[in-house]
Length: 287
Ligand code: ZN
Image (tube, rainbow, N blue to C red; front, side, top):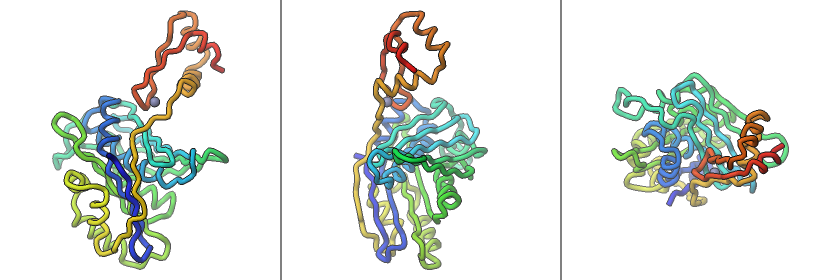
């Protein structure tokens, strides 16, 4: 079971959210049949979006993350609901690259770093909030930290990881996001960074432990208080109506062609493996 755990330091200046997300990442891999390096890129983005989305609070609010760094994977799109349940896809799920110089999946290479990370928060009323930042490395965690620094002016530390097995399945996934609240004493970030280095990689910790263990090790010396634990999952919110309205984006001529053929039209949801079948007459009702 995947979960997000939220905690705050004893002095209240450091907040942390950690996620273990192996199950939802594996679900994404099975839906999209992604290559190991794309599974890692998409899985890191799903973990970060879930953490940020789970802080939206307002029912019906949603968060969309879009990353495009000009690499072979193309765009990565992830959507979270206000509870941290996520869905997502990569434009080219089969994109692949050899491992990088240190023998790791080359997420930075497949994503690229010539482009932007954007975050759209839609609260269901009023104008959605949109923020974006230039990508730093395409490794995703660094890119989110840069986004928080530049777009939301919050000093943060972010670590994300996905471990993929020989059979391409997800063995471990997750990460954490630490944010410093206003007035945090000098030196806090240095102390956190030392903890982060000492703790080792997220995936090493998650193979053995869970999100709470991530918090205990990264917040060592800060006496973290657990505020909340929440189960999260891969969840799509598609429906016949939504998919039909997406079809309307195809353009008039294409829709008319489909109607003339008078055969049922099959459309698969981009985010999940749900297949919808429409009769030509239903397409005629598309505005
Ligand atoms: Zn769906």
